[in-house]
Image 1: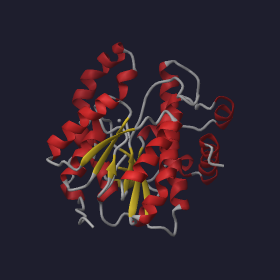
Image 2: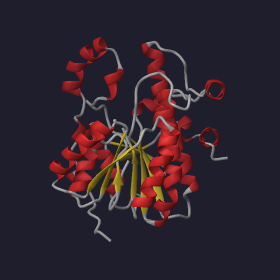
Image 3: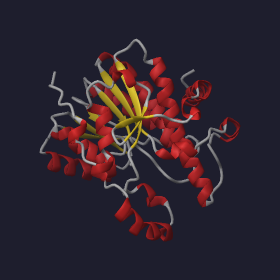
Image 4: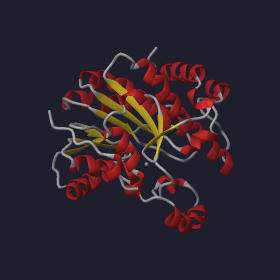
Length: 303
């Protein structure tokens, strides 16, 4: 096996898809912290699989990652987390062509209303369900390659989230509003899903060599808001330039959760600034996490 190079906290510097040591895959890896994460892992000698929705942008990112990392051991595979068919096709192809999966980083994220190809609310479908199904389909390979890790990129916005199961059952969406505050609420809800998913996944992984972590990367100056209005983007630009982390800084907690030695006892926990953090009761609610898991299984056709 390739020797692991553990990233120590003292060396750490300061959106859409997944990856690993020996075999990485970043969903959302064509821009922002996903791309930076892919470059860092490739530079460390990992085989990196870039999983991106856009073939054109994914292939362009492949060229960049190879050039910036100095590694040719990087490949691109198309993956649209807004399509359950695409997720299944990707997983099938990945399992046939890649022998190992040591770290799965679920990094993709969108900030927009709408519907996925399967009729789900866009942010629920991409930010949660796509990652849920992808993780499920790759879990046996992760177990076989253990010790291995699943890293779910969430956000501090989860603190403002709530899960409206009545809305999910009726509309397959976390919310239907289109105002600024309503869209922000749905995004926060989807990030709470990430934390609850990690909480429940850790329980189900007990007794295996797979651990999982969720995290807040920080306020990042990336393309996440590219689907918002041009006026809002213009207003935010000076603020993000001076007060937000850049993608390199923002990738550090992801890399910490993926590579830092000795995190296994903290499986299921939430990290920020490379440090484990306590969360509100709603983010570790056993009943809500179990209910979300069971609903997600039904949506994905797993039960």
